[in-house]
Image (tube, one colour):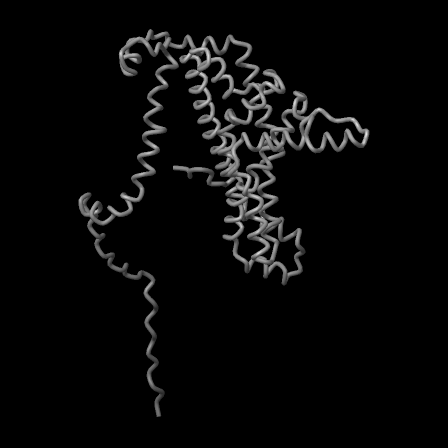
Length: 335
């Protein structure tokens, strides 16, 4: 009996036909999108209106930086803009030749650098410590206590520090009754940077840690479970899982902080300026007030404010480019 013929199997097709792509859905018209999204736009309108009225509209006033502005040059503010003398970069030239301006710049940058090292990491540490608390009730209690001072005004914060650390404060009276020397804390210009940094830590570190707590909540818990099963200790899990998970948020906030390097605050410094002296407490914000607004040099104050904004923008762009070189997204991604 002859063997049955062998039928050769057909080789698989190496060239597969491409699946037909369905035509793209026609984009909705502006009117259709408006009818669809009007509730979202309505919810965003109050925030957009506040942003326009209190940020973008006042930005038009930067023209004062190039004028010898006189608010009495016309019958209304618009005429004052039109009739004030145009002096070009004269206000900026005045700033660059004024030693007080450079003293304020040095103080501002020194305080920013000090707080960047000794204040910026504290919210990260607080978030990691708070996240390690297992009891949800205890965690909520600690979190509420820590970020409550954020809602205090600087007047109250400075007053509390004065009652505790001032010459007639609780600590000074206790040391005086014990026969010990009372340190000069609230009026010592040499330690003023330590004082304002401790005030900022007490007031805002708890509020800043909320962002890092949200970032910690986004880390996959299975990563910790797998690393613990592999024998990784607490420090190795912190170094290889927690910190890499926080790194994008840390880079983002660090870039924003660098962009805000010339803005260290106003109320905190103006409240303590007389106690420690102008040489220690004069920053750019107080310089704008005392050398611009208080003496009605509106153009000088506007020039200093505009210079702060331009330098801050350049710092943000530069820091973001550096973040891109290290593989981070930063505040915006590469085009």
